[in-house]
Length: 519
Image (tube, rainbow, N blue to C red; front, side, top):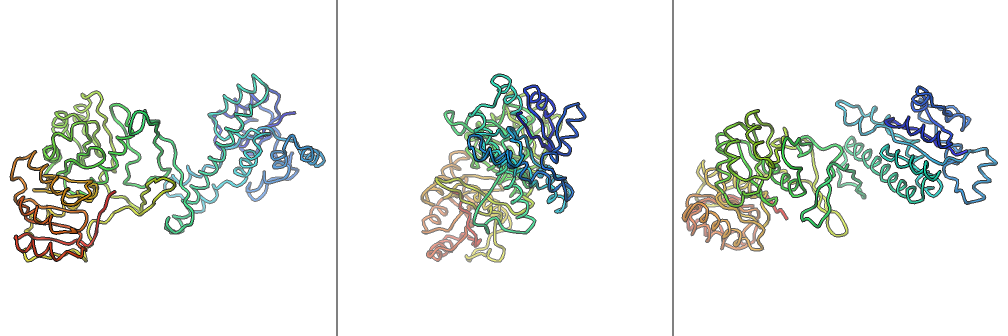
C-alpha cells in the first residue's frame, strides 16, 4: 500500500489533493486539524498516533517526532537493511509527505503579537518531516506548496508515481522553504533580543517573490523583485500602483533613490530622478510650485524620469505634471480630480505610498551584492553632526544662505560620489556627480546651471560637497562662478588652504563633520 502523510496549516486545496491520492491507491495518514478537515469531507485517513502508537502530548508540541513517522520517511527503498529494519519494527513506509508549517509569518505580522504567541507558532515537527522527506527525495516526494498539488496528481494519474525529476525539484523547494522559515524566525528573535545584525558570524535573510519583471536593467537580463517579509514602516514597500504599465526593474531602483531623498525634506517638495540619481530637487510653499521648480532645474533630464512628491497631488499639480513626459509618479496620496487628470497619460505609472515621505521607524541596513559576497551596513540616516557643525571662515552665512546650505547638503547626500550640488532658494541649480575629481563635479554643476538658467545663475548660490576638498581648486571655481557659501564635511590635511581662500574671497564655509559617500 502506498502511503501519504498529510499535515498542513494552510488547507487550501488539500481535500481535493487527498481525494486524488486515494483514487490512485494511496492510504492517508494525518494529524489534528488536517485529519478533522479530511473527515468532514468524507475522506478516510488514519490518525498519526495509530502509526506511532503514542498519543500526542504537550498540547500538541509532540506528535510526529517519532521513529514510526521518521523511519517510514527516511528509509531508503533500495537499501535492503533499511527496509528489513522498518519491517521488523512494524513501521510502514511513507511515500509522499505533504506539510506546510505553522503560520509564523502570519502571526508576527499581526498587530500586538506577543513574544509568547510568536514562539508558539514556531513549528518543530513540521520542518523535521520536511527535511527528512527532502533528504530522502529519491524515495519520497515532499510537497510544501499547494501550487504543486495538480502537477503531482497528474503525474500519479498518468504513470502511477511522482517522477524522479519532480522529486528532486520538490526537495530543493522544500529546503528553500524551511531555510526561509528559519531565517524569518532568526530575524524576529534577533530583533526581540535587541541584537545588531552586524553582531553575528552568519547572515541569514529571507525575501519573498513579489513581482516578475519583464527584464532587468537591460532587455537581455532576466529579473524579478523580491520583497522583505516584514518591511519597516516608512519603506518603499508596500506601494499601491493605481495606473499605468507594470513597474520595471529600473523603475523600482529609481523609486528607491527618489524616496530616500524625499524623506530628507520637510517642506512641500519634489524630487525628480533619472537613473536613480536626482536631476532636479526643490522645496516651495506648495507641491505645484515645488514640481515646477524641480523641473526647471533640468527640463531635459526629467524627460522619462520619476517625480516623487511629499504631499497630496491635487488637480492643479497634476495638470502641471501632465505637461512633462514622466515614467512614474509617487506620492502619499492623490485627490480624486488629481488622479483622474494623471490617468489621462495611458502609460504613466502612478504609485501611492502613504509612507513615501516618512522617516524609517527603526534601525535599518543596506545591502550591496558584490562578486562573491554581500556588503552590509547601517543606512546613512544622519545628515549633520550638530556638535561638529561649525563655520570655519570669517564670513558667517546669512539666514537664507544657511537654509539653502542645509537643503543643498540633503541633496548632495543622495548624489553619486564625488558629488556637488549648487542651490539657490531651495532649488537645485546644478548637480554634478559620479566624477573621479571633485573639481570636475563642481565644473559639471556650474556648467549645468549656466546651460539651463543662463550665464551667471550661480551668483549668490550656495554649494554642497559630499566629502572634503583635497585641494583648494574647488573654492577657486566656486568664487569664479559667484557662489557665496559652501558646506562640506571638512577633515582634509589641506583644509586650511580652502579656509584661507574662502576668507580671501569673502565666502562663508561650514564644516559638518560627517561625510556622505554614495558609491
